[in-house]
Amino acid sequence: MNEQHRAVGRVKEVTSLANPLVKDIKALALKKFRDQQHAFMAEGLKLVIDALDLGWQIKTLVFAKAGLGNPTVEKVAARTVAAGGTVLEVSEKVLSAITRRDNPQMVVGVFTQKYVALKDIRPKEGPQGGDVWVALDRVRDPGNLGTVMRTVDAVGAKGVILVGDTTDPFAVETVRATMGSVFAVPVARATAEQFLAWRKGFPGLAVGTHLKGAVDYRSVPFGNRPVLLLMGNEQQGLPDDLAASCDKLLRIPQAGRADSLNLAVATGVMLYEIRRGALKLEAVQA
Image (cartoon, rainbow, N blue to C red; front, side):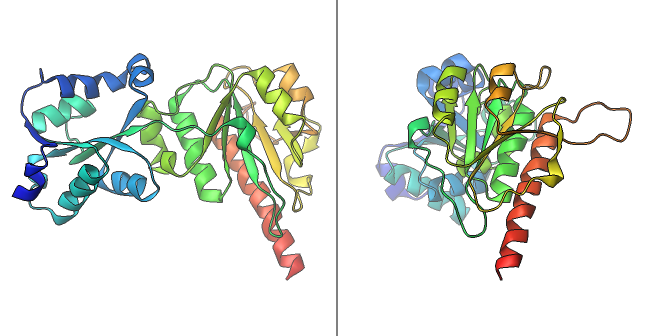
């Protein structure tokens, strides 16, 4: 780190686990403190760069002493300082404590949380398929949520709506499972009542997977309409009120002994089928 950066006064060398800044970052492992600080942690140099490129507000950059002299790390540190953030140069022991990993990434970023307001979601039609949003009811598992967000990103869907009491999209485990997609996928939150009120104005097709679904998921002509995909809780599936709000209840046929799919897998199957329908539409129009 050159002397110009040090002169700013925002670069601090930290070797003690008792340092208040380190304690605050470690506390982000708990939802209570994430909510209090309105912040979350993301690990890895690429993720931090992606987040900065996408306009996320960085509060603190933490990097290992081994990163000194790395021009990419120093550039990110300079960007952090320019954005008004703090830069911590720490020992590997401190970095391991922050990430709770024995072999931590060289760089960790602390970012301000960001949600999209439900009222601001206005899905549009498109010549190659309409906007796709995924609504997850009371999703409990951070790995499932993170994987769904990563898949939403991969297929080019627009975002995720969390309905009811769900796991935290900014939990460390969720962020890890997104593999960086947490910064690319808009997330909204709503109670079931708020969601159902918003759904009444949804301008496209609302579908949900359900064990009682009568329609094979491969038989729906999605066309160029916006699509709202409702997926139920891991244990209970879609509750009656959300199921009743769907235009169609779909089933994914099971050929083996398993009577259901993992939530993230089922969501992935549905998203790629919706995407396939859009590609078929594009091919027909071409």
